[in-house]
Image (cartoon, rainbow, N blue to C red; front, side, top):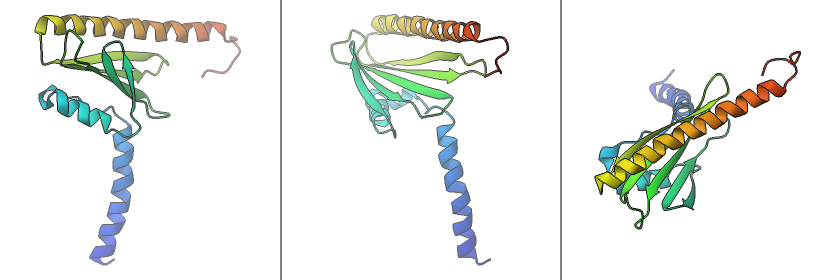
Length: 149
């Protein structure tokens, strides 16, 4: 096979594999990039939706059929912890429970940032517990003779 044809053939194999690999794990969240770069990166993610929610601009990336989803929170100018960013990653476990885990970056008042981190961690626990309870509720409502899901 000529070199050009081989290169095109290999590119045809690698490109789809790279696209699939990108969809199988949440995007990286590097605090060293800085508030503005994190925000620009999040806003440019394919399929991102943006909402305003209680002092935050929230960028949601929720690939259909994926075992993960990400909500990235950016404080607005009037939030006490501004500027700060947090990425909440949801991962679907084999049990069907969605676990939530947050990583946060603070670039302003560190006392206010500590409060934000504490609130995010508490939210992670609440969301994980709610998912666990829903899975248990669904299990208990199924017939014991029903096939496993």
